[in-house]
Amino acid sequence: MAFRGPKVWLWRWRRNALKRRADTVEAWVVLGVWALTVLAGVLAGWATAGSVEHGLARERVEWRPLMGRLTEQAPGKAAVNGSAAGDQVWAKVGWTGPDGSAHNGQVRVGPGSAAGTPVTVWTDRQGRLVTKPATAAQARLRASLVGGLAGVGAAVLPFAGGRVLRGRLERRRVEQWDTDWARFDALWGRPTG
Picture (cartoon, rainbow, N blue to C red):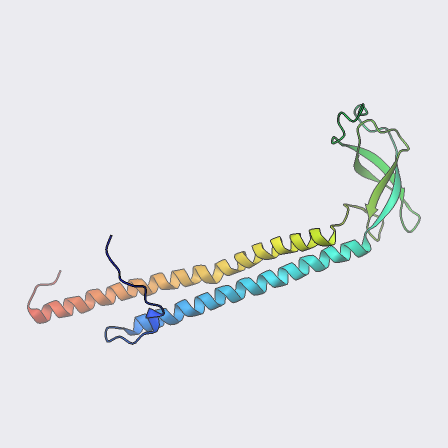
């Protein structure tokens, strides 16, 4: 492994007699790409997290629990002495919506629950069956995770674009070096190629 010496910070911005225009362009591209990557990631993550948290808060306000009753016996055998307390099955349930209309749907209940057993169902403003809304802590966690994913996803675009642009600049620089070396070799009288 070759010794590289101490790390020089901000080397792209230092004055140097061998520094070319392409080096300066690359320095600005790197700075711009990093700034755009961070900005796009933070803004997209922040906006997405706020939107998700707002939507989940609206659900907590609008969705209401209602008491429904099983319309038929749930499939399976009832748990004896709590042997299968964690198991649940889908069963048909009926409830009356906020406007007085009758609704039917399916919810998860304990196996073997008898018809007429009271069951708590969560409904939206129209009386349609929904899941239990997320708590405030769950909403913050979900919003943070979705916002983080959106931020990373949004940051990938400028980062990838910057990598492509730097690759093109590098190819151009190598071609320029080849041209300059050919000119230099011709001055010294050596054959090129």
